Image (cartoon, rainbow, N blue to C red):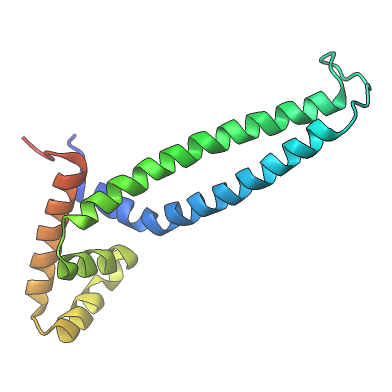
Length: 150
């Protein structure tokens, strides 16, 4: 079954604000973990063995290292996704970008109301709003993912 590129593209656009926020939160969390790691390395070892044979300070330090690496990987993945989305959006005109991102913010039940509102605000009929959305979605998808069908 072929992939529904329109659905995938709209899902990406809906996720975009959350991905941007996640990147900011990950940067903050990494800064906190770096500070924690510095504090742990400055502390004297408490020499209390744990089951794995190390001491509790070593265990805490390993936990911080693992969490930092996991967050770095998540950050890189989010950054790549955000870059792809921004590249696709940059291929659109301001009008196309506005219409497409507005449609990404509403659920399917609210599309008719949104199209009516946009047509009034932008001085065009509803069918023109839908046509611009569909054209923009296709151009966005081509820019982000290449050919969508053969």
